[in-house]
Length: 108
Image (cartoon, rainbow, N blue to C red; front, top):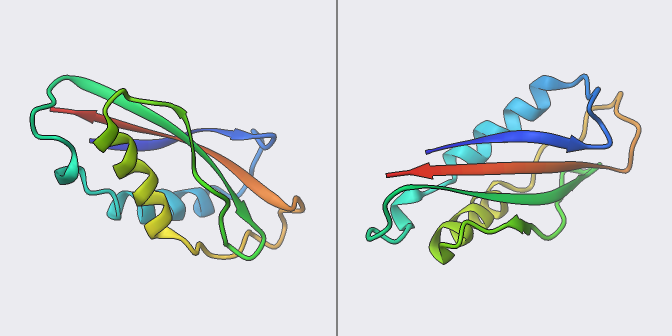
């Protein structure tokens, strides 16, 4: 199973890749696919969106595209929530928040 930051809202030229990598590593380490319904087989993905504010706190995590598997959707949201609070946004980034679209892909 893997996850990746597909697209960043309004900041496609976001220059702070190290920050995004840090977020991705944190969330990956908090994503427990063992909680996904063991009867599920095939390839699925769930897309979530959330905002990281200047101080590293986050908004609610919205499911933008459900996998159709409730336990998988919940595991993705839980991974993000467990990973917060994130480090403060980079000093050179001038927006009030960073919008993150994240895709969780699960195959078994």
